[in-house]
Amino acid sequence: MIELALTVRQCDCPLSAASAVHDVAFVTPHWHYHHDRSQLELRVLAEGSDRTAVERGLDVIRTHEETDAFELLAKQGPTARARVTMGTTTMMGTVVEHDGYLTGPFENVDGSERWAIGFDDEAAVDGALEAFETHDDEYEIRSRRRLDPATVLEDVRAGGVGATVLEGARRLTATERETIRRAVGAGYYDVPREATLGDLADEFGISDAAVSKTLRRAEGKLLGPTVAALASSDRDDRTRVD
Image 1: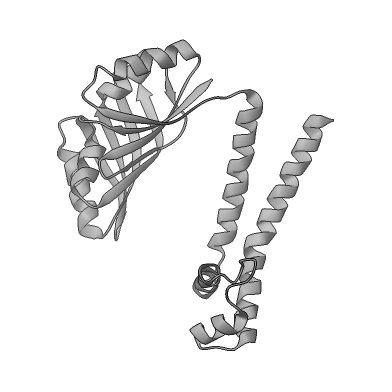
Image 2: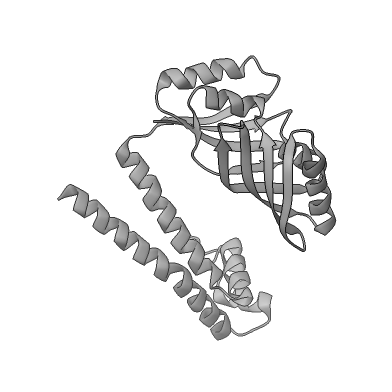
């Protein structure tokens, strides 16, 4: 399997049209391609600078000539979730024609999309890239790599570790998050240390002991899940070697 990471500017994509003119970004974690209808069905997450930006961006998608169906599923403040069915763009049609497939979610901001796509062999990749050159759309290859089973398994484990760390970060209180953010920014964790507990205490207007206690709580929430995830990864590695 060969995986390409691309940045693409499509002339005929509703999401690109929306993010190009409004301060809104989109992520598409779930999608399905209907080969019989040549349609792409998406579940789109939208986030804008404010509620108005999101609404205007969604209006562009709703009324775009390539949009076949639009359903607003949820909206709260500057975020929204929608179901979008659209025709096959020129670039995506080329990927399909060369037996390519998506390997990750779409990300769309400022009129550009970030793609992760896969092909089964080098000939398919080269054929798709050659066809891309005949289009009016712009693209940039950020990376190209061959994936073997070991590499794929490493990526899966890395994703698991990342999810575990993120879960720990979500457990931080607002005070813990701000304290550790400032500690890192001030150089408290640098070697040599650029800031002391006293410096942080002065910045927050509290005692050294209070800052230390907050940092220890935050570190525990972040490091505990991380160490557990790394230990699990080490066990997997030993099992493969044995």
